[in-house]
Length: 396
Image (cartoon, rainbow, N blue to C red):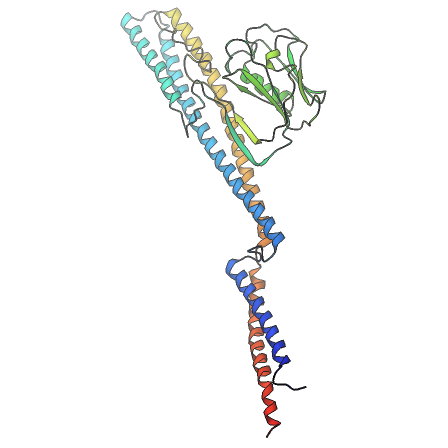
């Protein structure tokens, strides 16, 4: 039937042209943005997945920034430690020179003045080793907790916090034994769900820092220990432990070491982010740290006192070097974690790209095809619109 009221051919042609225009608009948007999924309208599920991963990339960047700040804090501490080490060498030189018995009173006084001035400058260096408000090497500092992952770890493990030792909390370079004596049975055995995974042999000459290192070594890294120098409390974490009874415990045949954590029940499962702890140090004189032997009582008034001072400085140099080595190792571990996070971020971004990025070569070909279809559709609509004019020929 021929009608001037209804032109079905024109309606079909218009529908096809509208569809072509819609597809052409989509292709042009993909070319303009480089994305095949640029909004939830394009593909809601894929858009939600991509947004979640973009959030993670941002979080990984924040974690890397935090590691950079922590590394800067450590670098400042290392620089101050190296400077203090140079001062200790000069003090050692003065002390050795003062052991000579042929020195005059004036010469010995000059050595003493230099010795005192050098000692005084140590605290100035240690107290000024601050970055972003954090000082790892001054007296009374605090541990630096560094977030090493963007993920919350609800299975980080059970924590054991020890009771505190009576009296003054020992420093990292002080003996672990505190005020008690050590017997052959005074060791720390670490258990996961009742199964022993390592034993630390506590000795009378072991320092707190050495004990912390020994915990990780003895358990093959399955248990980590940290120490709060201000409270004298140890904290142990077992990442693989599960919730339940006796998931992480410390036992010993002796009783003198109970303040290390033996017999203390495990705490709650931690839901905090994965972190690494950089233990605070004390590079000040008259403190409880590496330079605790460099006291104000040291003098070079005579050969005997000079020999005592020399021995004390040697002890301080050895302890300082060990702690600097530990601090350097922690900085290297953070560098390794930062490198991993960089690679992880790149991998996540690649995954996002595979979800939402447009294949521009393919879209270019589609663009040309749709442009031709658009022109043909417009021509077809024009032809369809002219069809009713045939009716005029019926009335001539």
